[in-house]
Image (tube, rainbow, N blue to C red):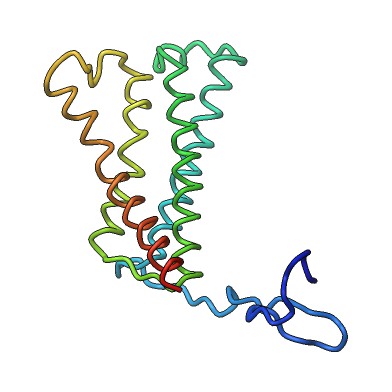
Length: 174
């Protein structure tokens, strides 16, 4: 299948009889061991936070629309549960985009950065989950609270920032 404006010489397409079909590069994928730090960690983390986000969505639905009182007692501030849910969805998309950009452009990112990014994606939105249970947790009224809030942004900023700078460098040097 050809899209408007797509050249027939695109390296991702091969001629088969009278039609152009995409070569499925992803069929060549072989799973890496999770005991070894690799780009696959981004997808595993994305899948994990997506599942947790779906869990949070159901919790919020049961609290707000189902009026499940015992859940309301546990999650006293359900709007923070929704904030966490949305943050995890955003992190899922960003991880998947980062993974596929690195794969497509053959960008290798350092192992320490993969770990930092995965940690940040899990840690950053989790504060909202905790605040849904205990609204006073992580209060930004104290120096410690402000430091913890600021620190929660560092791993994702460094991780996603590095990947996007690498993408721009690859595209502008191509």
